[in-house]
Length: 222
Image (cartoon, rainbow, N blue to C red):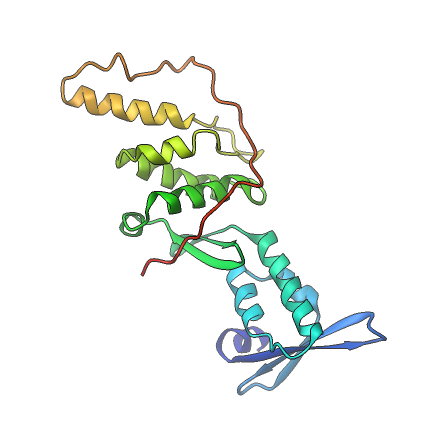
């Protein structure tokens, strides 16, 4: 009942205290299903989207409510980025704003280079490394390879993909992918590929974890 009300009928949220400020009491009011009193620990298990919806429904009527908004923002940042499969997209928090970046080809065509670079940077440097995040970043890399977007590869040259501990496949250097794609295109046209095609034995660029990488804003494409 609570989750149904949360999804469909959430009206506003306020906060109370009990036991001499030792414990917060979250009061969730709905349009047709009454009021729920829950622990703040409940929010730790919600998705990034749910956390953001709840935060925006907090009634800004007291200092305690502002503290709750700050607490939920911290929780959202901790859970960002989040890869969603249906539809396939990346949800993230950047500069205090919620962003959605879709990974299908139709939407990728609408993003400029700065947006592609931002989301790849977030996927590689924010939160824990997971296979879903690595796969999402690979979608962007493959798209930029197919479209021969050189500016993306120049900007991402020193921000290498971080792989999770259980991801067995070795990461492929982004520059190698880029120059191999150029070599294949030259080969199709019957041109020499000697200048572009690198050897696989070249040492890869060291992985640099840029947790404080500068990022720009991504807006949702409809």
